[in-house]
Length: 142
Image (cartoon, rainbow, N blue to C red; front, side):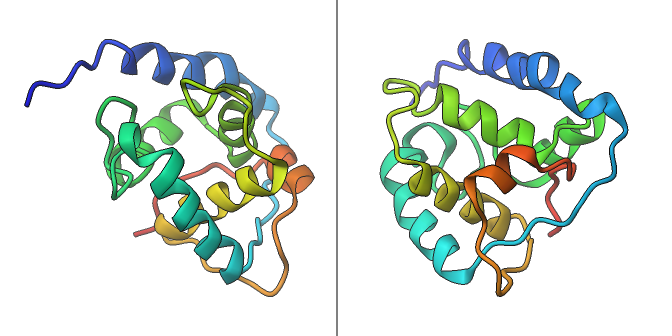
């Protein structure tokens, strides 16, 4: 099967240039917290809404990888924060229906992406505001 990656570069560029510049403020990076229940709900939502483009294991495909070395390299080079990534996801995804999910659904998907990348679930649930405002540079901790 041949994949068309022509749409990948603009998405990565938008994240890296358009949103990555927000992180340049040098603000302290607070920890992000999400619950195991949010990550579990996000797993199901990701499978239904995101995996067709970003891969079942967040490895990428028609859309960029959301895990592993690719994510870490992007984040290292652009200082991509959780807030930057979350804002992009909430405004631009799913690709064919941007901004079509509820706040709770977007938060659950973000919790799943973080969990998949090695972030540990905690007692405190992630909120839409906390995800939007997070200055923690996102990376794969695996």
